[in-house]
Image (cartoon, rainbow, N blue to C red; front, side, top):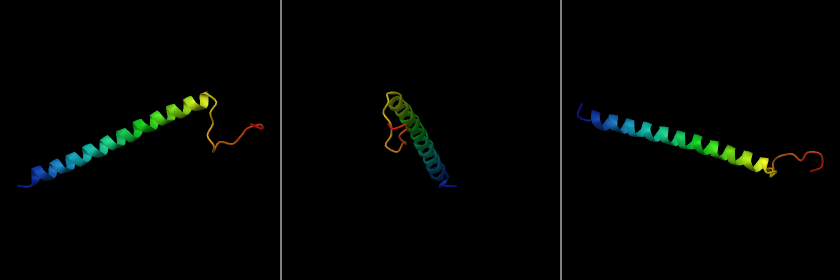
Length: 55
């Protein structure tokens, strides 16, 4: 029981970091999708996109 606080604090810290990294990754993905949509709306296409009708 003497190490219980250390163990619980370690698990709590690891869980907090895991949640923070997950949220950061999700938010960054959303930002990149918005950025890509804005670029495509402006007519800028990805190199990996297939050319349509002789573009």
